Length: 260
Image 1: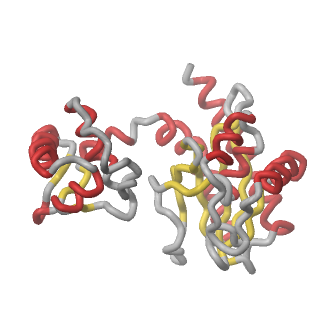
Image 2: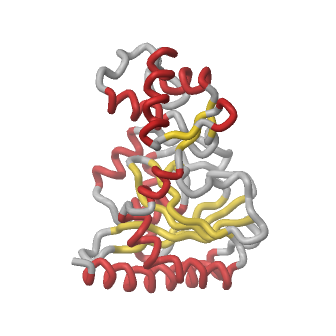
């Protein structure tokens, strides 16, 4: 597999949109700027195709190329702010994230399920950022994150099955890699009111998360508190996370209902 997740031996995308998508997919939170050789390697496209397609994307305002390195343009960034998950969800939930950060004084995050992973939609880290955590726009495995588990506990069985089928990779010695153990963890979350992950994604870091629901009662997102294990204690942080998620649910459900 190529670093961007495609088989480098697969047939070159035939359409111009497919080629542009392959180039855009080459960028992620750890590869924000790419030289031509890197873009060729990560996209899986021939060098001539990348050079030609990227030049057209610059003309269209989809890419910038300062100092011979390509990057996503501000034009696409402006469009991304119109995506409902970023606009409606973030605006409804942000005040509760801010309140939660003020109470916990460690990193708080907002995430949504994106296939078998969690997409980080918002993050407040204050003056004590933790570089091992993903930035906004990054993704983390659902199976070993409290954000992911908080949502999986209220998702369709097929969603949980897909996460398990994708592989429960071991990130640390504490990572849950047994499907049975994961299902047991998920079954306990509704009664408890929050998901707790202790050093399963990063050594020394723990996380507590609770789900946010839409107006139809379906799980839409989750918010979390993440920090050093000594500072993230379920008995102290759990109730605050659950209350913040409940308040965020009311705000988001009302907002979604009024917008329709």
